[in-house]
Image (tube, rainbow, N blue to C red; front, side, top):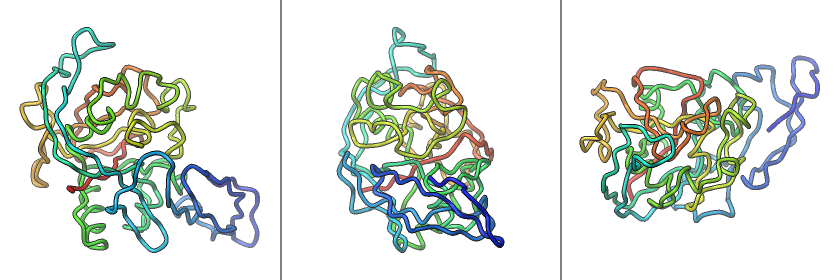
Length: 282
């Protein structure tokens, strides 16, 4: 995003690198001292050539965070025992989801800052890097404030919605979009062991970025080894049961960024490789 090129009288000067595929609008930038606690750029995600944007996209001042409308349907969730690196908790079963909208990108540090004013990330790179080190309880506070600001009802996706969207509408895909991990995902062999700006790899068939790799993504569903119907529901805010995280992250090998891979996480736990994306009922 921005590269530090100098300091002057308590200020930080940045050289800006534009990400054309994100449609960023960037002003010439001289930013007051606390570079690591404030987003360095006034980035505005406005459009993207892949996928059609939803009218449910988030608009806060000049910043637009795009959502994508997903037509619901039925699909075979999970994977077969013959699949690459299959796990027992990936039992193949038929599931249906209703129409919904989902974030085109992982929620960024910039958007979090615009809503809550403080950057919780363990690695505070600013701008359009994914926010991380957030628990489910932190996200609930973020979503409550965002919904007050927008008058809408954003939430985390269910596990079933997440996998359906990851697999480009429930298609047979090893990773989220196709079988070529290098085109789709930041993982241990290409990330430099750190998170990357959202949208740096190719999107999946729905125009969604980084669903495999970059940072893990929270869902609102309770974890069960056998799914047990929890994959289609959001847990209540009072429920402290483990939640499902999906997608893998920049520090993991290919097996863990597969479209079917599931992991259980304590909803109070914060890690600097776990973030999220938003969803919304249509």
